[in-house]
Length: 440
Ligand code: AMP
Ligand code: MG
Image (cartoon, rainbow, N blue to C red; front, side, top):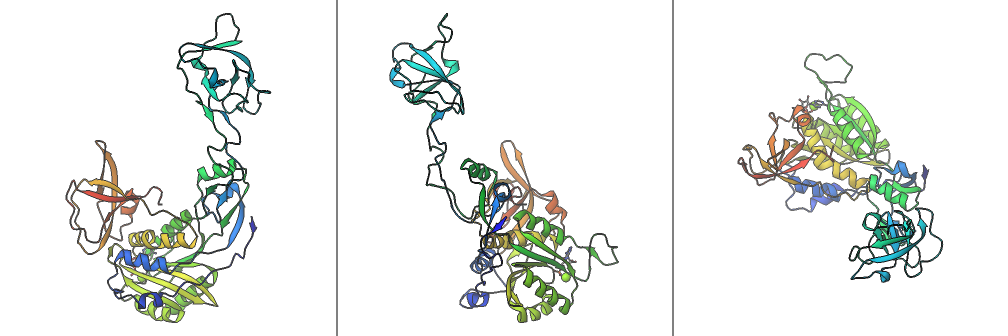
């Protein structure tokens, strides 16, 4: 891996307070999901450092510049079939055509010379089309006249159209055209495409560094004894998994107690070492008070109550320490709320910071297998189980929907997204779902 620009370059985030102060409908206590998403998006600047990595290491990385094809793919006209290549001008339309077999072309071993009128060659898939040939007939459609010992073939009338089974040079990609655009998160097909162009080193954005910690005096880490009144810290593990899947460099800072000085130290250290900081817990009513005071010194952070369920409290903004600035997401503490807030706020923001041009998550329509209670005025993300019934996708919510019940996430295979205005859903109504596949 070779660095080709300053890897620490971290452009300043636009100011959140400047952005929200001119919004007439900005109410931190009643913030619709879409408005919060729009404000977050407006505050993001992507990291701009680029590094070059070997082709295989580019999997799941963000492509940093457009890739222009240096060659035609395929480079030459070639056969799409095992069969016989010939010139379509020789085809008789009303009767069988008999051609002389002049030689053979293998993939990587071309037939030397051009075809004369009345000639064909035996040709394998991928072999270069010889001069004078424009058509290939698959071998199963020809017959070899008895006694000719493969020196002749007979093509039945109307067995093949002129130009058939020939792959044209550049039909996959033409030299000079864009093969892949910058911002793409490279997938297996992209690696193959880049390999087909002969490109061995790929420019990618540097990985985003994300620091995260859990807050709460009641939290114990796995491996520790569970004292009375305590719970194991699960958020650090769901966050670890989600950040890892996004391809971030992660800094796990452990558990920080509900102590203002310890929190300030943790925030300063995170800010000096990461592009973004994600915490869980400590942003709900009561808790947030001392966090708010500290944040007022460290940064430009808003404390929102989002019109959604689960995941109502959310702190968002930027933190500055030691001359460095980092984006900050203070997610709620409840284990389901953390995941839902991560997916619907942090995920897209982090992708944007990574320089990724990611398409919005696809919503799929399914039939509600049971009635679902829903209050208008908030967006609900219910955990659902999607299955195929009689040729139709049908979905039902998991049994328990509490925001602390992580089992609901583990049992679900999708999220049922019930829009802000939506009321109760009757059994048989269509609802929108987001699949976990491709997301987690
Ligand atoms: P808080 O937002 O800090 O008031 O936390 C809300 C609820 O989530 C409380 O019941 C916490 O114990 C729980 N909680 C907070 N952080 C975690 C965590 N890291 N792992 C598991 N539960 C947590
Ligand atoms: Mg707490």
